[in-house]
Length: 304
Image 1 (spheres, rainbow, N blue to C red):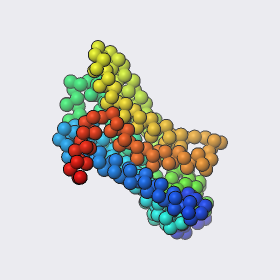
Image 2: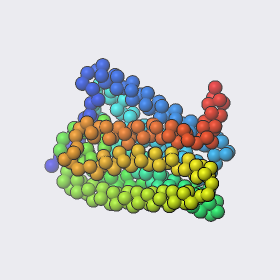
Image 3: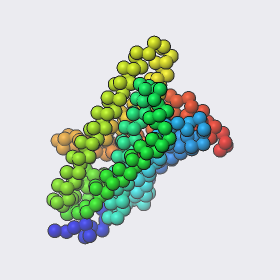
Image 4: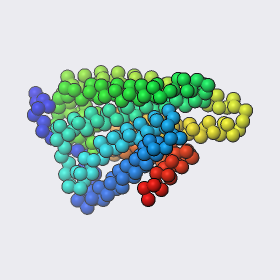
């Protein structure tokens, strides 16, 4: 039975049947990538440079912007190169590295969204304890835990992966569901066990997020002041939008039954949670946040 050492390259999904169509997709992906770089770069620079944004909420937003940059760079860099040069090839080493990086960034982002829901819960439901529970040391510890544990989690998914069923990946990047179809029997069952463990942890985080926002909404509705309710809701809306877009597409992509799966559906879902979500997160967060918009405006003014 051939193993990973006999596989030298994989063939990714082609985004077009002709070279002209491939070039069109290259320019579309390049525009999305540049928009993501600009948006996340401006948000991270604004948070880092503006002293008024040196709070726990914006510290986590800075981490989220960095993870979004890593995620979209992992998925689009090779796809753009292949579209530009009209090829489908990706080496075995590049595929494993891409799989590891993508799992790391996407799972760390999910952990960070969970932490951000806890941040909003403390800020709204227990405001008097906010400075104590979410001081700089606590924030750094939680962020380091999100990055560190997800690094180990990514190693579990990519260590000792063996391929026996061809090298045709039906996706524009190396994604776990597609790689599973090419895995040897032993690797397949090992990955399924890891996926079950990962899904159980993801479900626990999902329950935590839901419970946090339920308690937040109950606390907000009890506020006597309409202005106070509006201000509290305005700090939660962007995070709810990010969580909804990310979780709805990612969960359906990984947990949908095989009977409803199709090549076009898999491609659309992958684009939504791995490309669109990192690109629009800065826009979602900035639209309703005056402090972020003012800080970004200052950064742009200084650059000009």
